[in-house]
Image 1 (cartoon, rainbow over the protein chains, first blue to last red):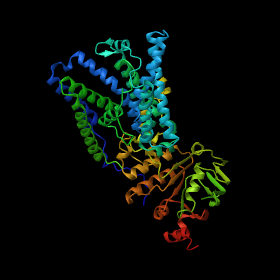
Image 2: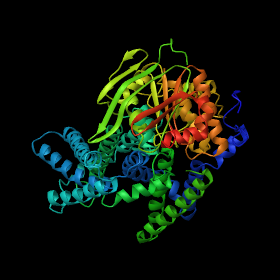
Image 3: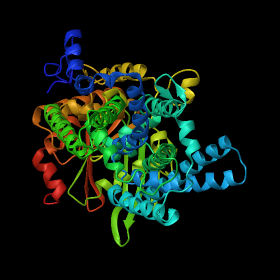
Amino acid sequence: MSTVETPVAPSDDAPPLSQLRRLAAFATSQQAILFLVLVAVMCFFDFQNARFFGTSEFGNLIVDFSTAILIAVAEMYVITSGGIDLSVGSTIAFSGVIGAYAMQFLENHHFGEFGSLLVGTIACAGVGALVGLINALLITKARLVPFVATLVTLSMGEGLALVFSKGGTVGYDPGAAVWSATGFWVFTWLSVIVLVITAISGIVLHFTRYGRYNFAIGSNPFAARAAGINVNLHVASVYVLSGVLAGLNGMIWYFQSSGGAPQNGIGLELEAIAAVVIGGVSLTGGVGRFSGIILGVAILTVVHDGLTFINVATTWNEVVVAAFIALAAVLQSLGSGARKRT
Amino acid sequence: MSTEREPILELRNINKSYGSVKALTDVSFKAYAGEVIGLVGDNGAGKSSLIKTISGVHNADSGELFVDGIQRHWKSPHDSMAAGIETLYQDSGLAPDLTIGSNIFLGRELTRNGPLGKFGFLDQKSMERQALEELEKVGITVPLSKRTVSQLSGGQRQAVAIGRAAMWAKHVIILDEPTNHLGARQSLEVLKVIRAARDQGLCVLFISHTLPHVLEVTDRIIVMRLGKVVKDSLTSEYTVESLLGTITGLNT
């Protein structure tokens, strides 16, 4: 055995990519395929009904996208860190009801529309943070697996939303719906705010230390801990972040439905997880691109809206969505087979 | 090893018990910069307890630990890392979904200059470039540091993990079964990196059950049995048979 320094890593099975191969790699990447699927779906609906690309329908798409994206972002953070958050849907209901009470109270005391909306938003985010904190404690202190812990808060949120609202809509507020429809071109102000939050979340996930730790923990928590990362603190923060995003999403539902209703957002955690899966995020953690979930939510939004637009009974919606999830999951498992993970 | 040199790591009469079970009894040895020391013993001989004591996972009940001539008391693994000791455990290793560069800098990320850096924005380019440079120093050439670790072979992965430890350690790297689960050719890659780390002036503690690897790569072998050091001699004084006999206690 000689001690001459020769390259340890054999380069024969791992040649550097040429420009052309890099282009080919991009063209066959998940993001490019997803983008093509999105364009194809939009073109399909446009052929069915020429007005689909019209400005007003495009505006509707953006509003619906904005209503769905925040809990998908929340799920993206949690799932890439190696967990799952089933409570985001019921947090929409719970935070919306509590936020609606807060706003009702303030308006009754002549607080002014803008002030009460601001406090309502903070109340929604606060309720979300509280649910997230309970998740965090159940997972990092009580050592429950994330699925069980967030199943607990899923039921808790649903139940408390019903208890507090007594089953009806709280704080019916048509003014909020009018305000939420204002904006410019195809954007409402509300969707602009949501898109800014989304963009910041994506940048933090892919370009900062916080995002790096998120992927590292999802990929191998033991390695992350050995590298000196405070894994429990990070995991806790991710669930709180997820709760806050779900709470803000509750406020958006308040605008959409002109009040806080206990049925708002129920079951949407599965929709968010579906978008994340379609976006190519690994449910085992550590893998995923933010652009993937943007495309995932966009595809689901276009499918939902498009089917309604071409007058297919909404009952078919979930069946078509199921087909998309199946397709995405199969593509993923084929892809990961090629990547040879161990 | 010459005795007039200052040892980089020295243990004096280290004792450790878990309840009524005595894991380490009066363990003493000296380790010098630029040497690979094999630490061998049967299961339950006290190897793991010893590494945990050196790397700060737990403290000894009694005894003294010196690194670079200074007596140390670890409160956590962070303290030992700060003192220049890097430990590669069997179960820790690397994050397979991150790039090689990201793994090398995990927990020690470089941030950008200026205000963006204050917000934790990463300087990925510098990390990827420096990672390649540092790995080359220990004889590891990876084609692209942008590759994820999952795209590497088992041997390459372990080589990168050791390269990472060698990059950050000032004095000592502790390797717990680094050639476990590796094929023959891949093990050779890993042994080569261990030698390169030694040639850089590091002290390498190599814990392994694979005795041919131990005999091949080490300068000195410390044999433990039932929590005690039973033999501490130059590698040239052992054969596979005599080493096995010393480990099991069937010949002494």
